[in-house]
Length: 270
Image (cartoon, rainbow, N blue to C red; front, side, top):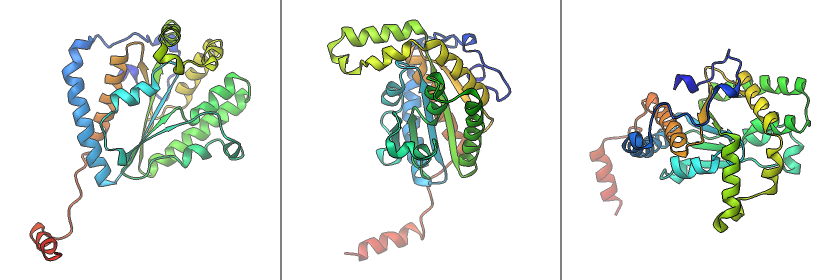
């Protein structure tokens, strides 16, 4: 996945990444492997939840129609809901606006043993705010540094961070918007706000490139995920998560006392 991983010292141009890239794979090539990854993820998440040694924060960012909801629904399905949380970040509430911009995100970060997915995140405060000139470039640059330090703090306290930018083409977004209008069952997904934001496509691309260039570190790198092909998007993200969990080499916690003693205590409890 090296070609999709952002180096902390690399200036990013999103035109260098193709949204239709599948790393020379075909859907049929990875079907069996994908099913194996899903089963492995379910197993690893159980151990992760039981061990309670780390927390995992998964950040999904991308343009409208990039598939943030779909990633959770398809790639991350079947896990233990007790240790899995999805948190979406919309326009800040009045209370949230009265705090610093990281406050609402910090209080939703995962506890030990939990996996939390941020569907959008604190990065919105250097994307939407910048595109619509609510903050200027010097403030954005200062926030890049603050975000990097915030993530460093989370990592030093046992949180693993995986950040995925779901990279789609403008043509693909148009296709998805039209599909929402042409399919009655998808009408509820269409929002005039999506159409309004589409007019700022080029500015968003520039701001995302700046985020990727300034906020990728060795401890919390960004991954640019080609997302025009949904199957490759899901495969890529699931593979990265499973590899991360496997590398932890966690096991179920040992029980206090011998099994024989505990069995006797259970029997005597009647």
